[in-house]
Image (cartoon, rainbow, N blue to C red):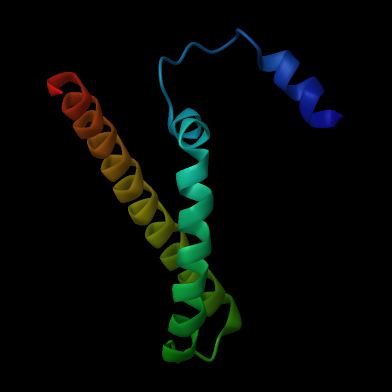
Length: 94
């Protein structure tokens, strides 16, 4: 309920043509899928990180997870858009 009140308060107060949160929302399925892949990769990478401080290890793991997720999601979105264009052009030719 509080998030709805905050969203209504800021509605129309800031003008932004395009931001990263909107981009993630428009490509949500790719980010959802990439998060699963990234967390699976991260599961194996945690063992290789030999830090005694759990907080630093957690922060490093988080950064790696977010980076892998963004990379995989953007590659998937690019591949999908290219495949979609290719299919449309193929249908037009036939």
